[in-house]
Image (cartoon, rainbow, N blue to C red):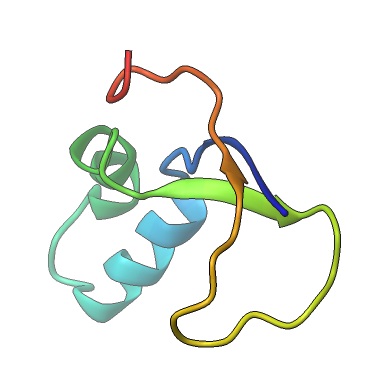
Length: 69
């Protein structure tokens, strides 16, 4: 079973990596969290391990979130 804990919030760590690729653009590390808000997917945990193969059924528990609610 996969349990979704919530949204993957944007952070300065990812922004820092982007800024490293564009050293001529100031402030990218701080701009990334604002630009990436609600665009980074979800954080999930595998609650019970097991095999998952293509075409197999599985259960995912999603808490109420802005995109679903």
